[in-house]
Length: 54
Image (tube, rainbow, N blue to C red; front, side):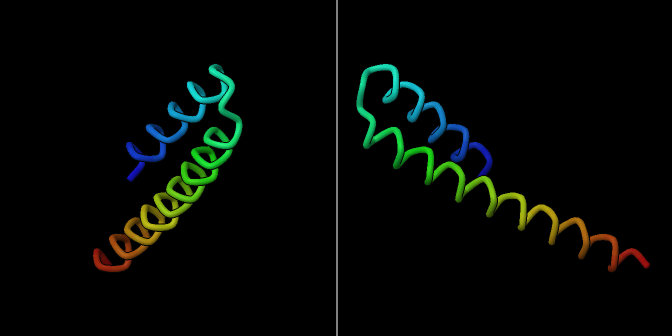
């Protein structure tokens, strides 16, 4: 999931460089959403792993 977030940020950078502001804004929003979903899932996995080892 983190890979896809980075891919969308790279797409946003290229789109911004070539002047496609609408595509860049959309790619940044998708990248942000995927990054925060990754963070929530990683944190949940970490906490559940700690609780199971007790």
